[in-house]
Length: 255
Length: 283
Ligand SMILES: Nc1ncnc2c1ncn2[C@@H]1O[C@H](COP(=O)(O)OP(=O)(O)OP(=O)(O)O)[C@@H](O)[C@H]1O
Ligand SMILES: [Mg+2]
Image (cartoon, rainbow over all chains, first blue to last red; front, side, top):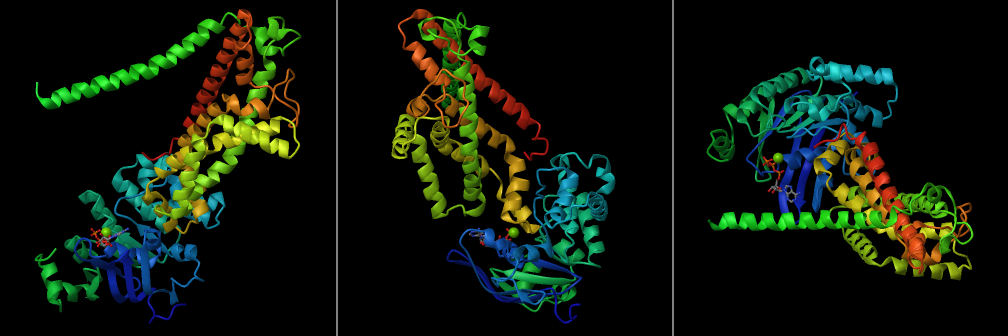
């Protein structure tokens, strides 16, 4: 049982360099549990970098240097003792362009559970149905579960990626502009699913669409040139921003 | 006509010329072998070993060399595969893109690729003498295996380089290890390309004469022991073409035809098999 005072994700003085370029500077924040947190800011300000720091995917980049702490459930994830596969299992990730795996729809959803040790076919079948339903895809694919995932439409692929992420039973869902490759109908579909999911999951969503942030977010982080300029409840950031840069960004003066 | 149209037609001409050259020389080689060899091709040749006086134009066949080459080709390919696949996976999934170690390993493989096969043969022979071993199937498997190792490893490496970063990232993001990502995601995506890499190497290995000249030696009997000499098709071709008798030379061309058909059959079979596993590949 977590103490309610300690959120799943916190950072302390997180700084990230690519080579000599500093892209995140002294970020300290807490992501509130079971809410949707939106990370907003102009292109290139470090949103993706911040998101990928939460599950250490940032380490796959070339020449990256990280200092400071990211605390997930109280543990510093950059501690060498940390089991990175267990850390990543806690977080589902949804990227800008859906990346399905080269296998059937069924196997895409079952993949995460299989690698984490689930072999029971009947159980896997139930899991696949449950999470495809949750991602709003079950009815569309129930008849072709064993067909290739790459033949789905992009919107369906993104929901498949969501189901795949959920199937690992994470507590947190990280999304990097999850709707930017989708049409308006699929976007709305995904947004509805997020509104459902936030009852049980902590959701962090990077978006450059301010209207989307307004629609979804309970909490907002505004990044500008690698700095955390302002963060707080969504209505406060949008209605009464404290910083001039936040106000300018929201009014569309800087981008 | 404006310049861009001229450019376009010049390039079209160049491309067509090279297509004609490539296809033409292939057909020319196959045609020569076929015309010169098909008279001598007979069932006896495929199912009999050389009897007394075979190389003077008498009774017998080249079953010894056919079976020898198949056994040697499969052995060397497996040997190279066991070393190449882990190496290629290591280069692409465990090392970073601009890693020094990967750069050095690729450089060495490229140099090895360029070494002529007679040097591999001589190297194998030197090692055999050092260990006081005679020419044998095993020595040939190891020598030919080393000969095709750089070809297989670098071809697989190039195939694995085409894996999009996002695909491995998606697998890692679910908490998969590197090995799980390699075996369960990456290999599924590139299986067709890996099979091609294996087939190219097999074709190169089974057709090479210089590397087996000293290491495999030659024999009239079928391969029956890893530690005894073994006959191979390239050497059977070499010996028969080297005789002064036209009917034996004709048999040399027939043996070349058999080798070409063998490689073709293996390639086609490989494509058919790997085609069965490409249903889920992302394009
Ligand atoms: N692998 C990398 N190597 C070097 N520099 C990088 C790398 N990835 C990102 N950067 C740089 O780091 C900065 C932050 O990048 P990041 O992708 O985090 O921005 P972002 O806020 O997500 O932008 P966008 O809204 O365009 O996706 C950018 O200036 C970018 O050029
Ligand atoms: Mg980004």
